[in-house]
Amino acid sequence: GTTLGASAAEKGRYFGAAVAAGRLGDSTYVNLLNREFNSVTAENEMKMDATEPNQGQFTFTNGDRIVNHATARGMKVRGHTLAWHAQQPGWMQRMEGSALRSALVNHVSRVASYYRGKVFTWDVVNEAFADGSGGGRRDSNLQRTGNDWIEVAFRTARTADPGAKLCYNDYNIDSWSAAKTQGVYRMVQDFKSRGVPIDCVGLQSHFGTSIPGDYLTTIQRFAALGVDVQITELDIAGSGSQQADNYRRVTQACLAVARCTGITVWGIRDTDSWRYPNDSPLLFDGSGNKKAAYTAVLNALNEG
Ligand code: G3I
Image (cartoon, rainbow, N blue to C red; front, side, top):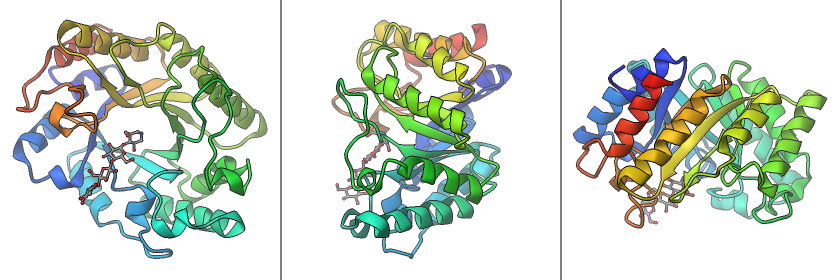
């Protein structure tokens, strides 16, 4: 193939980008999106604060702009995200206990129902594990409603949209040896053994200038539990051949595992990245030119 999306499709995979509704009027951005990608993730527009700004009042206008752009062009849509400790609307931040649990269930149900049939994968729960050496859950108002809040969210999402792949999504679970990775692994293993509906693990894959040496192992081990793996928010610091080599390694690792079903980069041009200007971590420069990293990914997709 001659584009990321077409080349990934030849390998039975998708290649996506995080998209901001506010950039859909930028022709350079939109031309790159339409030419290169066959999947999109809303960078912010489907989060809890965006979709339920006041309790019980749902707003899908900006999410719909992204969904409509994508579906009109045959692109898939990843939903991001139904439940997260961050980006909660103010009313939810101030809630706790059983009232919060009910609000969570209602939110997951309403948003997943609204997008039923339009979203192929949901990040049902985002970033629920703690960093550091403990391997346990992150403290949050959601966690304090009870340790079962994650499985409740997954069961609710399955009922609302039985056709969507349901993912647990997190960062710093890329290295197999990390305690956080082990904690998520044990949760997925437990969910599979008890029949809690989970289909996928999202490895966000926000990287510095190196990729964990055991990244492929992580993908293989999650896949061996009987879930898909998706690389959901890829961006890599650095520049030139070092950055390109790292992008090549990530692409090759996904292609090496049948259950690694697709890659999403977290933005299109460096200047669209949440990490800019500290880093220029994406595949296109600020003018929309292909970087060495782009060519490395494209070649890896076509070789793999
Ligand atoms: O749109 C408002 C603007 O009106 C306002 O003037 C401005 C002032 O702060 O804020 C703008 O909203 C910002 C929004 O991005 C759009 O640019 C928010 O403050 C800012 O918090 C928000 O950041 C997003 C961040 O998630 C929120 O946690 C980033 O764009 C987005 O890339 C980032 O994405 C996350 C994933 O969802 C989860 N994994 C990590 C990843 C990177 O942090």
